[in-house]
Image (cartoon, rainbow, N blue to C red; front, side, top):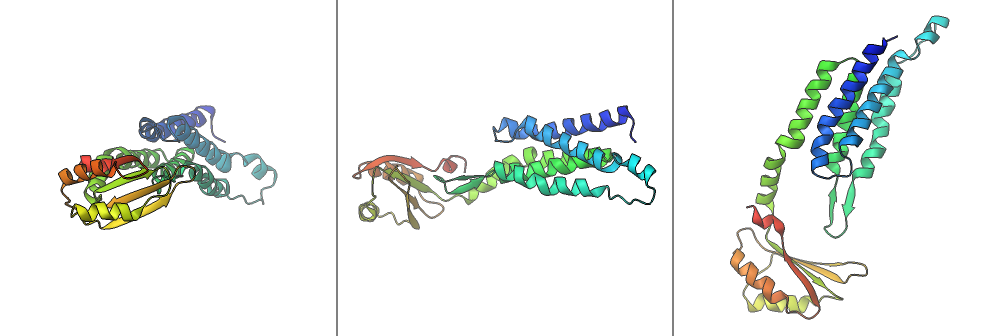
Amino acid sequence: MLSTPDIAIRLVLAAVLGGVIGFDRERHTWAAGLRTHMLVCLGAALAMIVSAFAFTDILQLWPRTVLDPSRIAAQVISGIGFLGAGTIMFMHRENVIRGLTTAAGLWTVAAIGLAAGGGMYVAAGIATAIAWMILAALKPLERRFALRKALPRIKIGFADRASLADVEALLIGRGLPASRIVTRRIPEDGDEVTIEFARGFDRVKLGYLADALRGLPGAQSVSLDVALRGS
């Protein structure tokens, strides 16, 4: 059985390492932040300690008994998926899925906790450093790459049904060919029309077009894609 100081070291180390990963999520105000990551890592470390050392008394009473110390640890890896799924949110208005990175971070933190609980301090520390670099250091590079991939687009919110004929007529009248026009019905909030243009589209014309689209019948809001600001 582990000594009390050794148990304390493993649990405290797991909480600290989980906090390192959770700090990046916290400053981006994601659903799973600092405390969530610390608790997941701490819980995983405790589960590993229980799995590996809590049944030594049974082995002494029944020497022929065979226990697998990896069974509880395996359930941690499987069970963390439920918590990770809770951080994944489908943004209906934007038609995108958010929270996948946070869910993957929780899964990684659980594995780090298992390593700390199993006494693999070096592995836990190296994994924490790599995970932090992926989450924090690579974020600007990922954002820059995403901005380069983004296509110029305008979103128009209508109070009721959108008239694609009016939208197309305005584009043709201004000689601005669109690569794609998508209409989406938002329950209790009218239609949303997204107009995408080819990469390299003149942004000055895009601004004038946005002003003109405000005059369409039923148009309540017109917005340019925020990704255009950074490229």
